[in-house]
Length: 210
Image 1 (cartoon, rainbow, N blue to C red):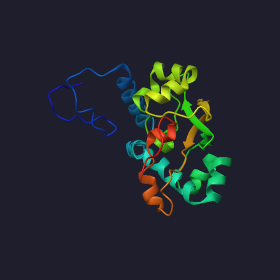
Image 2: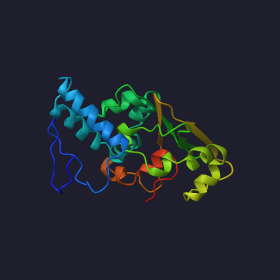
Image 3: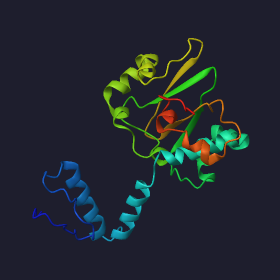
Image 4: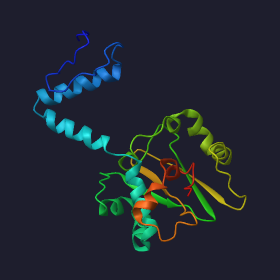
């Protein structure tokens, strides 16, 4: 692959990564090879591939925040969300594909924490890419063994009377925490509510603050 500092276009019409100073990793080479093969075999066009990439790039915690804000504002929607997270998200135009999304609610008596002990399974459709710490072995192991200590390190100290439930995500089943709505946010619009819902609060390592 040329390294003369210019953008280079692959046969599928996609520019190679502009940073050519460092050699491509094994996985970058594999991605380019698979992408080019799909186009060459007529399985997908360059435009279709780019559309899927753009769709994935649009996924962010803002989608999950909108879901939480709707649940805080609409008790009927909240009930549907807790009963079937995937279907409720589709109501809002958020496609979760074949993923089974389970939504767990934080209350005065219960706090939920999400982890993937095997790898980094994560509800990317509604939260985007997982944070680096979520994928690290330290979090994956300690969140199960000493969840209260982990939460304290994130700045969340739970009363001893609060039950702490740790949920282990799998390849086909992901969890989303419905945080407890903070006091003082009564009467807020969904847009205002969504602004105080962070990614970390939907994993369970933070709580919304006003």
